[in-house]
Structures are given as C-alpha cells and as structure tokens.
Amino acid sequence: MSIATTSTAKSSAIWFADGDVILRTDDSLFRVHGNTLRKQSSVLEEMLQAADKDGSVYEDCPVIRLHDTGDDMRAFLSAVYTPSYRPKGRSDAEVKDLIAILRLSTKYSALLLREQVVSVLSRQFPPTLRRWDSRTYNVHFERNAYAIANVIRESNLYRLLPTVLLHCCLRLTANMLLGFGPMDAAQDLDAVNKRAVLFAQPYLSHQILQDVFPNFYDFDLEVYGCHDALRCCRSKGKLVSWMKASPFMWCYATSTMETFLKKFEFCQTCSRMYMKCYAEGRQKIWDDLPQQFSLPPWDAANEGDRYHSS
Ligand SMILES: [Zn+2]
Image 1 (cartoon, rainbow, N blue to C red):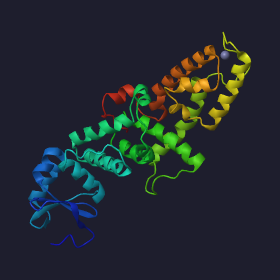
Image 2 (image 1 turned 135 degrees about the vertical axis):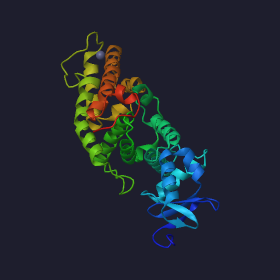
Image 3 (image 1 turned 60 degrees about the horizontal axis):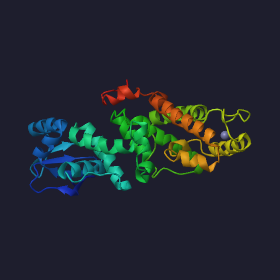
Image 4 (image 1 turned 120 degrees about the vertical axis):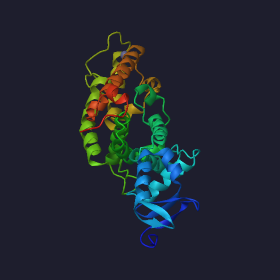
C-alpha cells in the first residue's frame, strides 16, 4: 500500500530507518519508535496497541492516522526525541513550536512535556502581579498573543488565561488604534476569547480611571497637605491627557511609575498619594481580572488546571 503518494510526504526531519511505527498526519508521515512514544504519552500508547491489532501498514510498519498538521507533529516529535530541544520563545518560529507542543502534549497526555511548556509560558504570562511586574518583555510572545490565548484555552490552562487575555486587550487596542495587523491571516482570537476581551475592555478602562488614578477628573479636589496646588493641578491635566491617549499603558508603567510621575512634577505629597492609589488600584484590578474574563478566580485556577468550563 502506498500512502505516501497521495497528499502526504515523508518528513525529512523525523524519519528513523529503524523506526517501527508510522504516524500519519494531515500532510506528513513520520517514522518513529513505538517505545519512545509509549514513554511520553499514555494516549499514543493506547493508539499503538490498537494499531498493532489491525489497521494499515506502510514499509512494514503499522500506520497511525492522526488528525494534526505535519508542522505541529514535527515540533512535538522534535521535543519528544531531543530533550535539549525546548523552545523558549526567542523567535516567532520558537513560539509557534511552543504552541504546537502545548497543543499536542495536552491532546496526547504527554504530561512531562506539557509541564515544561507551561513553565515557559507562565514566565511570560504569570498569574501574579508581582511576577507580571518583573517579567521581561518579549516581542515574539506579544506578536503571537492571539494564537497563544487560543491554545491556552484549548488546553484548559485557566491559571495563565487571564494574563494572556490582558495581553490581548492591549494588543486589540493597538490593532484598533494603530492598525497593527496580526502576524498572519491565520492568527485570530477564537470567538470565546474575543468575546471575553471585548467585554472586559470597557470595564478595564473604567476601573483604571476609578481605582488606579482616582479623582483625576476632579480638578477642584486638592490633595490634603499638597505643597503647590496650582502646579499639581496643572500636572494632573497633563497626566489626564496622557491617560486619554493610552488608557492601557498602566500595564507597562510599573516599577518605573515613581520616576514617571516625577516627569509630571507633582509635589511630594501628591506624588506619594498617587503612587499609593496606583499600587492599590492595580492590585485590585489584578485580583478581579479572571472574573472580568468570565474565568474562575485566581485561587481556583491556581490549584491546577483541572477546571473545565462547561
Ligand atoms: Zn501637590
């Protein structure tokens, strides 16, 4: 039987002459070792057992038909075969591989691999505000935020989802205001994520003004103990204009907020008061973030990723 002559082609990356099983995806064939797969994935182990009993054969090897793309499978098998191959997101290609490995390690219950990918992703999309503030900005994760949000939801990783959706909020605003396109046409937020982001956005804009920069539109209000009411009121005006232009920038202006406020030349008392509101307001919004995306609260999601939306 010649299944390679149809729309599928032998993978040039993963084809072991001594392999004893063929994985057939939508567009590629992979010749691999049953033993290696069994060690990693309980689901593939069961499929191997079934394939041994009956099914098609190619080059004397049983064939397992999988409904995945060849690209995803190549990334997954590369990680299975090469323990040193653990994409970290240093390029768009690495982020795509990470997404593929998460998708397939979830689907085939390759738990060790899945945990490794989750640990990379949770550094970029941490579940706590403290870790969010200390993370390193990574343009490749940023650009692929939609695809990451989709696979994270698909994989029931509810402890990472609020942070990823927050990234999508920022991304969507940038797309709408500045016309950034997604990386490629295939990348789009799935319907549930899009709905969650669009519903949360007005809330976030409102809460940022109310909790993070309270009383900012009340120009008559004088901060108790203010050293220079006129100067501080003028500074407030400048800061409000800046806020209008970029309502979501609070997410990036974190530990530098103190330095940032100095630029607006508030007196020390006002500066301290705004810093306090800023810190407390952000924490309040963060604590409430999952619910705004219709997700379980942090505590429930942090217990693990056993939560399944019904
Ligand atoms: Zn003042």
